[in-house]
Image (cartoon, rainbow, N blue to C red):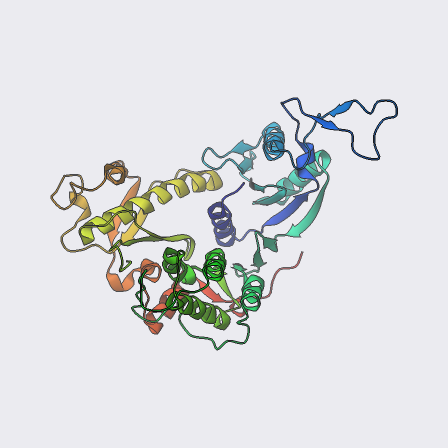
Amino acid sequence: MARLDTIQTLIALVAQKGLKLFQLDVKSAFLNGVLDEEVYFEQPEGFDLKNASHKVYKLRKALYGLKQAPRAWYSEIDAYLSMCKFKRSITEATLYTRSNSEGDLIIVSIYVDDIVYTGSGERMQTEFKREMMQRYEMSDLGLLHHFLGMGILQTDQGVFIHQSKYAKSLLMKFRLEDCKPVSIPLPTGEKLKKVDMSELADEGLHRKIIGSLLYLTATRPDLMYAASLLSRFMNSPTKTHMGVAKRVLRYVQGTLSYGIEYAGSEDDSRSSSSYAFSFGSRAFSWASVKQNTVALSTAEAEYVSASKATAQAIWLRFVLNTLLKCKLRQHCCSMTICQQFRWPRIHFFHQRTRHINRRYHFIREALQERVINMQFCRSEEQLADIFTKALPKDRFKHLRLKLGVKPISSLGKAVEN
């Protein structure tokens, strides 16, 4: 299945290039897969053969419910796309491209029975749709409007993705549809502890809220830090944790129509690793995760965070090379860096870095081979701050806007099919 990062990268590319995304839906997709194994099943009631009730059927193709069905379907469509001269990405198995002598390019992404495609030539897109419909029974859904629970609004100005419908259902599910909105998800400097003096809360309810918030971060990077922070207290949450979780839902109440437009923890002293990648002027890949180890210095925390961002940058580089059909030379990473730590010196062991787990040291090779390039970024200009701490209202809103998180009304009229 296509990764969410891949779909968001594709959306960002489409917005920048002024293209449009289209969708095909394969009917009963798994029934197209040819089985490699011998599989037998009993005669279904009403279709049994007379005088042969002791016999069984041998399957030639997959059925829904078979564990082999998804793999068989993928093998089938992969073979067909290869026959149609598509080239599969070496880093994303469900991403395909095909170009012609005129320089036109078509890009295809597969997610189970959904096929999302875009291209620079209308003739190539029409030809691709014809090829698919000749092979499989499918529905032409036209412009991509919904995908993986996200609403996708394509306009002449760009692309807007949101989960407004899901956000509304979330508030109704937790009986907060009439709650009073707040302007920021967390109070400035909010710190949570695993153990406090308040009573235990409903653990099941707490888990449901956090899971729902994490799902919302697919189009709401402004919720990333709050959801990540609360997810650290899944076991034995207290009413304090529950109160903070409900406060985040109150923030969602005040930002229901928001989406993204494209054109550390006190208990164990672990830092947060966060990153945000932009394509053009808007973020399309982001994350905020708690580090697995206790950093002994600011330098170490930055080093670990940089290594995680580098790994994601390298993967995104491969994907973009496939989509753009060209070799990207470098990724440029802007980071806040403490005064005692300077990137040109990381090729040498130092008392501040010599104890760091060696799995993080691959960043040295990435810099040496010029895969990435580090640039100093002042703290007040650091976009990823929104993923690492609870910020004052004005700064939070400023960074939210920089990420491209806006109300749906900010975009122009949607393009019709």
